[in-house]
Length: 108
Image (cartoon, rainbow, N blue to C red; front, side, top):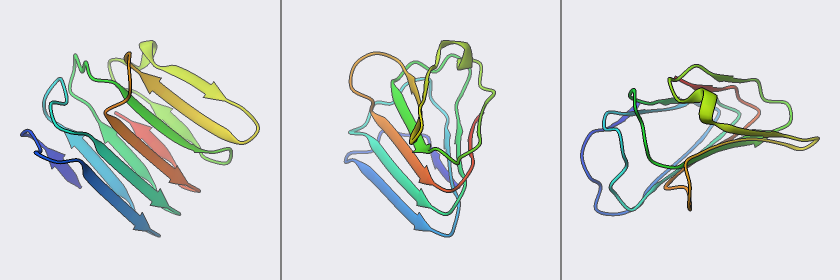
């Protein structure tokens, strides 16, 4: 699990194959250069604090189960089509971009 508490000076990049990515954000906004994480054949979990304000994008292929239980989930824009599933939050360019292929997604 990656816990982000401070302000990263550069963009964080994570990649895993056949393993999970779990990101827990402790602040209500992202103040760093950004976060890009990709899981292939692994689950993806994003834990957000109550009142989270920064923009994010979570996406996957069409076979991925998706669960959103965070306090902001009623404001998340969801796009489901024959090939992709996307959840977007906030305005402007997403500073947090998470994706998975063939793994479940949870936003908590």
